[in-house]
Amino acid sequence: MFRLDGKIALVTGASQGIGEAIAKQLAAQGATVVCAARTLRKLQEVADAITSEGGKADVVVADLSDGASVRAAVATTIERHGAIHILVNNAGITRDKLLIQMKEDDWDAVIDTNLKGAWTAIQAVTKPMMKQRYGRIINIASVVGQMGNPGQANYVAAKAGLIGLTKSVARELASRNVTANSVTPGYIETAMTAGLPEDVKAEFTKQIPLGRMGTAGEIASAVVFLASDEAGYITGQVLSVNGGMLMP
Image (cartoon, rainbow, N blue to C red; front, side, top):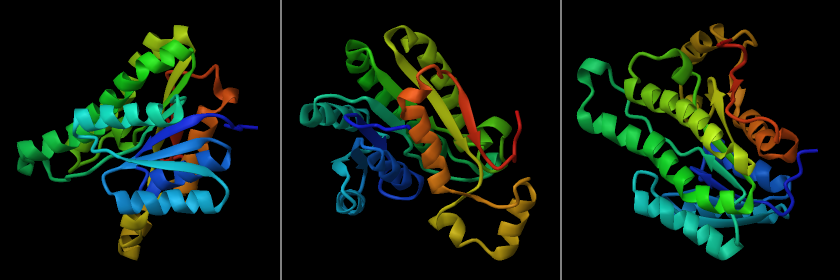
């Protein structure tokens, strides 16, 4: 089940964390994964790890805040591999500040990368996916985009916007057998959260009925499912992977 043999997947933000886990799991299921991010060295390390396990991987440098860079990454992927069947919009940044302290640059940087960058990538793959009458678009949003979070007005707005964008894209492209869904992670164990004090982690887990943070691999598993043929009748949905932290 959930095999992706013959599929070409473009994953943004694939150089570390959740994006790296997604790239590796897609490759493990047979997809050729094109890893995109801003740092070539880190991307190459991920691609080398995939190929060392017998998977297929390629790399392309892309800055999601730069529309031309995003469109070039999509064009390069199609030029090298002939198609894009799966797009995973995972790249994102944070510039956390309380609303009263947030600068316009903080707002613009997060919106441009986390929301506009995803929109640009979706727009770039739309014609090829419509023409081939097949596509899977998966956007990595966040539980805070559903519930809000103090000090993250820019990030929350971008992630909430990404959920709305997903639903509009799903309605526009469904007639061409292109699905669009979002995954909303809760608190996930990453390099960033690993450095948090234990008392802070304990406060986080108090909010989670399952009593622990999630793993990047658990987010990747949700993405693999939505990318598969078995999920062909699922579109416009929000798949919450948050340990029960939010039950909408």
